[in-house]
Image (cartoon, helix red, strand yellow):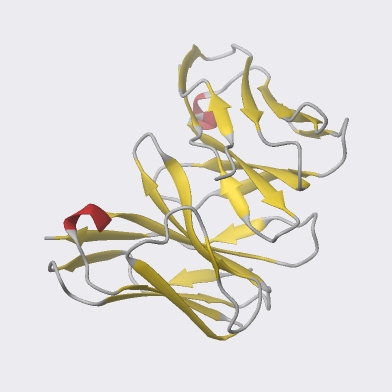
Length: 111
Length: 113
């Protein structure tokens, strides 16, 4: 079993706080690392697909970094807003065409 | 809009029934996946398929089988439903190009009584 681990499991922050989550994954058979945002009653939606060591991606207040040699990725949210409340999932896509997810980080942003 | 459609949003079945969960995508994607989601455990991979008639076991294939007779359709079959298969089931589709994202269906909440 390919282990993809995320921490923390849950996070409660105040509006305006900046926060970050960690995803760790096996460094072998790496093809891509995905970040998804999953809101209640909706389908997961992609935030970033990252493929190269040292990749940094940004979308508005959300950014992510990737270290394939040591097997981790960080997701950062700057100035959290209540609408950022969701579960954030990372997924590890291998050269065998399989895709494994971590258990997710559940973020709650209080107004 | 790209679409992955699962046949039912909610399903209630009896123990021992054979259950079919259907997933259809309109993106011509090669890879399709079935996951189940349980509290605290995230999305666990049941089976995946990278081409028509091809299937590979994921981490928790026991009690499940799959069928992919056409590229757009990936079916998950519970041969004899049990209460421990009560869960949320998610289907996803992804293109073969390695740096593309996956697209998900809306999920099927299955309850086995």
